Image 1 (cartoon, rainbow, N blue to C red):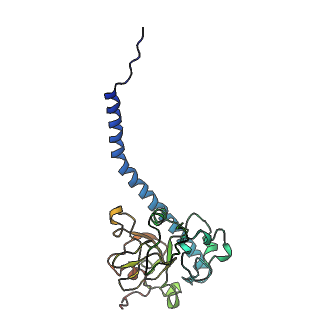
Image 2 (cartoon, rainbow, N blue to C red; image 1 turned 180 degrees about the vertical axis):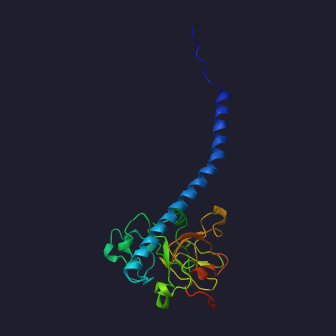
Image 3 (cartoon, helix red, strand yellow; image 1 turned 135 degrees about the vertical axis):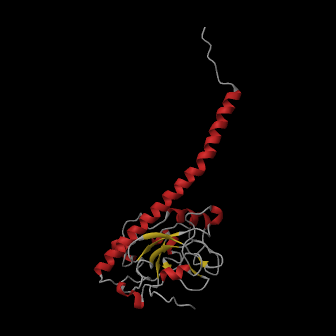
Length: 248
């Protein structure tokens, strides 16, 4: 007679313990890989922004699109970045001047920003542009350097194209001491401490979200990670006039 031998309780506990140990070892590595993948997607998105910018400049004799009308056809208003009712895929008649070069609906949202914005919600006063009745459903997460207008709307007038940011990410929360929250696709840097600044959530831990990096694209077309620190670093990398840097 063949007697089938079953696992004992101790053997099952040992197997479960080994599986739990493997999960504990592998989970941090998997999370790190996931974060790296999100960063790669974000940089790829910004590369598409860079290519769209190049095509626009070539079409319009090296003149930049206006920072208030590059994405939407009129100046940004509160909540557009997280209000699904303003998605330009569904409302192309409300799209700004860069939209014909940037129609791919998959390139406008950094996955890391999307996760953080949904979990954190809108920032509070005094900088909040959010209506509490509008769900935070991020549609767009990249902002344009608003200093690329006026005397610096022409590419030839930019003194240091490899150092000047065109598009970058911002935080969706107030960055204590030197930055305000996401400003509806309009990056308004100043030399002061309470300025719009680059995001700080890439390549850092959840406990140090104000100490990481942002992804950005530059006038010369390259994409790189940049740091908001120390202030006013955002202004320095947005300022198109070269040295000396104006000081308030």
